[in-house]
Image (cartoon, rainbow, N blue to C red):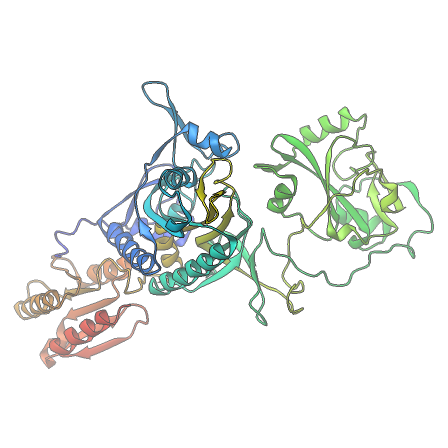
Length: 578
């Protein structure tokens, strides 16, 4: 490809709405252009990257025994009603009507469609196990699209679904997919961690995410891990053993009583006023889960992990209650307390979830739903709770104790690029997707689900491979392997050498760009670094010595080689791509 013909326009500045490295660089280097909020055009350079990632995914999925198909992007309401997700999925599901007033949706995922396909085509145990996958665009109407391709509304995804006769078969395929994912991300040049995670809207009993570890702002989730063992988990799933803490306030409070605690709206203010550690305070937080109030009780030195709380309630959407909603709740129970003084007593009819940190607390401090007052020396029996509904709803913190080996946990940022789920019968049972077993009985399929974000993987690669000058594409997914740059197109020797290298590389099967533009060398070099060509061969003043410069983008190393050796070097590097 000649640079003068390549459809690419680099920008002098980063887009004003770009927040993270991948969004900034992909836009500035001419890979993507925004069409509307959360929706992007994939321009020729980007499309080449995406197709290479797709090729790697296809090769590894096919090698693992999966079979590719393609399902419709638009899906009927009736299928989603069968699974029970039409009302449960939330506002991310884009609903619409066709000209006949049939209600449809844009597919954010394809569990319902693939289950219907299996229901019609897999009738006997003799046809199982089967793993079917597709690569297709998806649409989720995110409330706040951001981070470019990392959290857009329209995106490209590989999703696979396995069908087995029993849990043992699912376990085997789950491990098979985990190994395939490791190979896929290795080939894409990404160092990933397989971490325990929440199943979210997909559902299922067990799930893991594949996270690209990064120190950039694009890391969406905290990943807690142990250097001493293999434990690692997303923040919404991580658990830990709590370090020792003061949980018995007997030495602070000789009796149980309600006392004045004026202007102690925060945990810090209350602890300072009473001269006690925060571990002796029972914190009560009000959340709205699926439009209903929920109280979360937790030891005050710890924070609530909202996904854990939502799952404990069995909800779909969660948020912290507003001041107005708290005031309305207090009024409905005959109280006038403001945040900071709320407690569980007198909250009959309201769902109360209690964190495990509360279980061993004794003689603690708790709000009593009266502003400027708290109960001190309280115990669980004083709270008026009819049913103690304990769950782990605590956000793990760095330094907490690993649940498996007892060493301190570490934390880092991660970008999710893939996930695997054990669905079990979550979809096959409600959709009556059954097969005939060896005894002639009808049984629901045991299902698994396995997703990879194709466009997210490309963005994550940029987050992991870049410097201040631009992208450093891994060779396996770079849009082109090498750019050949004649310093001056008016210099006959430089131009003829560059063209000869270009032609030799083309004949060798190397994907090469010749920068034949009549531009200053600095402009060409800057664009080469910004776009992220893994190799740059420069025909310049060193030609007087019979040499060209070969630069490795990843390391910055520059070698002086003969034109023939430069061609051989790049050709060998490309030949070694997995």
